[in-house]
Image (cartoon, rainbow, N blue to C red):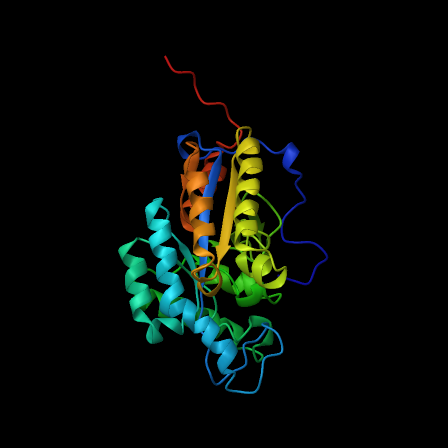
Length: 302
């Protein structure tokens, strides 16, 4: 994508769009994104505060707790409500913690590329290296999990002008870095390729809410429920996407896991919710766009 003042899509106010349909007449397509990340003791945790000298044992240990304990609490909680994860996965974790991949596969979780390590951002890569990072990430996850990712979330949501082109060329269908809508958006690149901007959340995200804004577990639960109520009501007119972004070292600790349980229990009381994954949302949306079915009335039943 060439440098530009606006994104690779036209401005589209949601009040002027045709109706978007989800399977079963659902009002909300719900996807949950566990950010399962790998941090090396030999590197500073980039983007996570100043940190101490290497090895920063205190900061590293907190995050390692999420991979040793917290993620499995999350899995058990999501299992209770029949919800699968679409994991934003650092590919270095595949070799270090293969048990997590195995447990995710048991649950038919989906895997998204999320760089190789969370200590390295795409916009900090040496010249010419970004495309290699993307390709290695996708290949490594594909080999370890048996499914090459079709989705992407950049570490720190940081991109360069070239990121979207590299992702599309590698077969990535959707990505979550552009958090500007409650419905999927087709991004058309200079090459003519397209990639979907999937609604991700910087708000319903335990990192921004709990770690940066000091919201309590109960407060985060209320944020999820309040957001769901609005999207569910609006989704009766045209389908909405709800994203819940989670980090095992935050929501997976003993004093916060109940907040996630309460929020998912509340959502599950509503019938018109499509509990799904990123690729399923993207492909359903793409099929509607290609078929020209968005906004068309369904034929009356005889």
